[in-house]
Length: 99
Length: 487
Image (cartoon, each protein chain N blue to C red):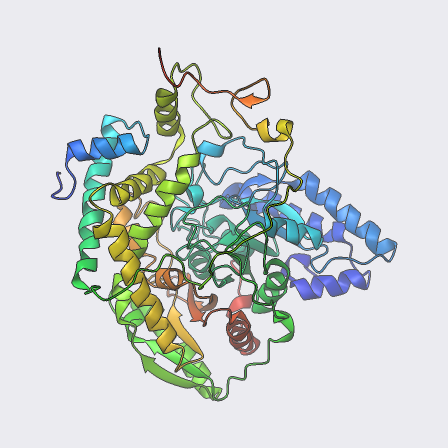
């Protein structure tokens, strides 16, 4: 099933943005599911919001500041304890840029 | 006396009178868990050794006549999205399998500081994405009332656990109904507090402007005691409110039912609602009328857009929050991969569950160049409309009464291939999260096939005391909350 909202090539682009490697099977399944979900969102267009401001939070909080003071925190061993790989007290990752 | 049938207040009284010990209580709950959980599957991790150790410590304090905490000797369970220092926390996902947190969530720490006893970590849909626990990366929890049915979700492990008396209470989280929905489907009581009432610190984030940690228990009274402990400003979560925390348990009879104005929103009694659910929920209005309350017909027209608003905004926040699961600092990862991009792609592709990938895809799409205005911004504007409708309504009523779930529990497997149908199970709960209001779910009867039905009392911002008081008085005169599955 193909969607009017999302084409297979767009779908691939989104997966790339989201850093998700999907199998062919997953692609087919999600593409059709996403299509019906996106169609459902059309219900929003029935509402006139031309004079409405968006809400990004709901309890009217504004600018929560705190003192910029150093407080106790995890030491290096603790911080690294769940890492898949570490080296010389740093997180270790595969090569980022190939020469 | 069956210890596993007592409330928090009752257990505490017996402990202080030295009629029972914390070890007795803990052993009774652990024995029940050992017997029932292999079938119900409410727990991902059972912390029996830790529980016994904690219990002994409390008994020691009692023996020495030292001061004990407000929840001393009370066995609790916690949804596996709460970080518990030194105890595996999976968020119901293979992504975090084996993850041992280096610190604890604020809410868990507050409960432990009051001497509550941790029995274990409960099952959930992966990262709380779902309404049935079928999206868990581990297994599906069964409804204690009928093992062929789902317990609701996402805090389904927590609800099943309390419903089957494997713990006195459980902590869950409610982003779109995840406390109220399973509470309702399992016949127990659950509170979704106002956004910012309980700290989110140390709880795996789903949608940060929606997530609300909260309790599931057998009675409103228990909920009040727990909320007194957990609520309040937390410097580690800037979105927590500095509004003072009332002594909820002392205010349970404060708001008299006589003269109380209860709003009945017509949009919550139409459409997909099951006939028996509608009937049982409407019967509660007769109850309140008899007690002298006034039932006022109201309309919340934007309710019909609730699901769409929710399922645009929440996946957007999810896609941002899930970016941290890169397999580098925590979580499972693919080995022997040569470059960073492949590492991300392979790791996330391999360990993330279906629903996680689906929601990341929806959110990434809705936030991507060219679509932001049509989806995220549009939904954020309708969010304002939904919020304003509630604000206007609360000028006229004290509380809003509505069903929690349009149906009773459904059979395991029934909706798993149709995510949109699964999303629609949240139709009566999401708007409350979109607006950030508190809401209390309570049991109010059973369907013809003996599955629990619940209703909710929605309150104005930070008026937990009022809905708890109304709910408590309802439970003083009804006994649905005492009915338990035969196990």
